[in-house]
Image (cartoon, rainbow, N blue to C red):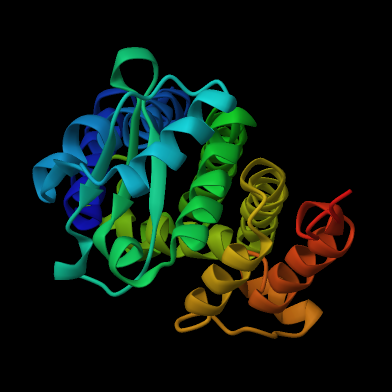
Length: 276
């Protein structure tokens, strides 16, 4: 899916460059933002269901707590869906996507088969946190700014590189397909420099959703179980510098620490009250 979308975006952008050699970077940024919005807001509702089997989850033991949690947090979902992700991965995940009538709560079958009810509720609290905290809108704004900056830097770099070495490289101009290796090189350099900042942005959102989910679901033990499961494919205890550079989610250790700290500060929720 990502390869197909990436190919389509590349073809469209190169077409923009060839047709608009003076303002290509402005139009290219605009086209990229449109694709970004499509991928974040539209694809999860209308495209991804074409690639996986989505079915309505009927088990009230699972759906009722989730829908109750959704109503308590202002999420107008009426049904809970299951996705057959186990055909492709063993990872556990869920999401809240769409708006209004297209609102959808989805759990993958790995979470349903491997997660406890408490774990499922904690994961859904986290995902609802992304929705309630408007992380989608914030991501669109953040990445739109980054896209504009990237295209401005790309234009500046290409103009100077081609003015100095274009004749030697036999690149006739920005619309020449021979310029693509240079574009990919510059894009890779930009991505390399931007990666720690990208990961920090995403990791901050994830931490906010973690804390929201703990407060909403009140399932710190379930959240800890989820963090341990995620440790199957993420390093549990990286160093601070390693986490800043390479991790786009809080480490498992930090997540477990946050959950246990939250539980320690809310022990009255878990301590049976003595009878009179």
